Image 1 (cartoon, rainbow, N blue to C red):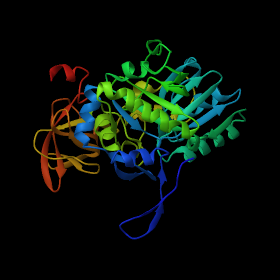
Image 2: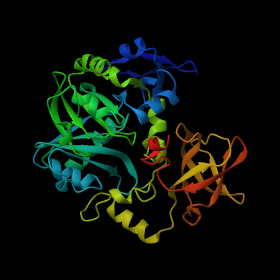
Image 3: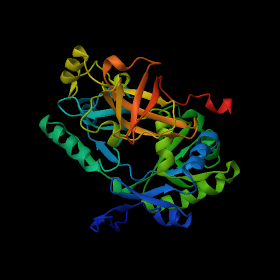
Image 4: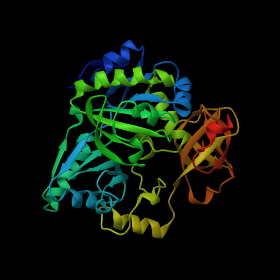
Length: 383
């Protein structure tokens, strides 16, 4: 089971945080820890830049057990997912996953998530700290609509590992008899990996080739973690912390729920229209259609800094001295060696190639609006 240590904050108050079952392994690997969404997780093992480039060029191993696991079972499981997400779950065949979002009645995002269709049941992966919120919401809607379904939060029973990078498939293939080339993009299935049963999915949060592993019971994750590191020595594998996970996802313009959805954002504002299946009824649809028709809403926009500066969450975005937006996520790109940011910007100020100012520590830093993603698929070939 997961461990629950006490952490003392800067204000002297004692807070409860959750440790991964792999905490001892991380400590032995000299990890520097950070508290994130109530979890005490590795921030980095060497340096964020070193770990970041390791994943872009070869392969890295992440412990992402701060994420959540919720089983949805019963004859109306598919109906519940279809009702509560922007995807029609009946369109997702067995052994396939789907990225989607769970909305409130007003169309704002509760959480973005991936669900996996496994035989006659579904597993949904809420973000860190969202397990109880999502479980309660789904159970509430199941009851309101008289659906025969069971929604069970099993997050404490699972460890989630992510093996990401161009060499990830080659590495994992050495550990299983299953031909991993048969698991297509966003495919998922139950397999045996190094004598351990797990759920594998061709998914990730880095923009690289990669897989995620759902492992239960949690004590089985320790030997599997060590075996991946051992076999991965051939590829100079490294453990990767949350720091590089954040820079990797931002270079590919992947959303971070706590940042991009702060304050109540809709999928239209978050530029997630591509993920909306409009051909079914779902909670929040009416509100989204109204917003879509009006059109006067801020949208997520990609900004590259033209001057030295590190954009951060909450920085103002200006045009000719007028505030036209706000940074939701920002960092220094290890691949581009420049500041990059996602920002919610007024609809009339989003033309590709135009310049906006990001206010960083009271100084206006010039930036250019660029197409997503910041780092393209062929980046490695240009190095």
